Image (cartoon, rainbow, N blue to C red; front, top):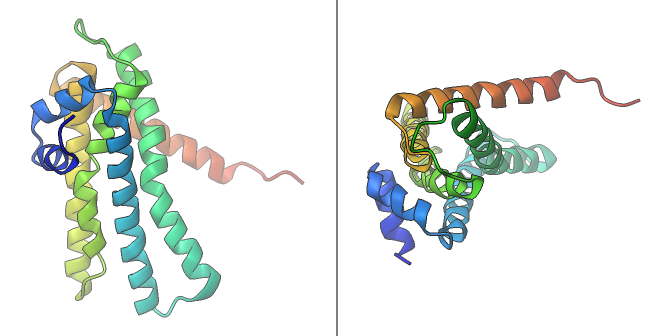
Length: 183
């Protein structure tokens, strides 16, 4: 099994062979989970610093940090499931042979650039926002490459899969947010 840091670097540099290697190695799911945990910790730490700088305290700060820290993990698990369902069912190519774990492994490593989000708190605000935006866009592009390699099809099909999965994820979250609470 190759080293975690070299795989993270390869995924960050959008190297297709890194994603293929991760896809083929069932043991790399633990590493992918660690990458996601690092990305979650990075944005949670930045969220805490930003909250403290803004004077947020107590339960509100804890909630802000928890939500910021859990969103990447939830997005990874649900987004990967939706990408797998869309890509392996509707946009399936002639060479598509995959399972959910392969998609989880590749998309987990696609969150490698998310570690840079630890610096999203840096002043001035446009710098921190720029770092957060750049890291987020970088993760999205890496996600398309990860889906392309996991599902063994072209870039346009991977982009369509990711956009469809994102739309489905948004609809799911929107639906949950407007659903009436039980009495």
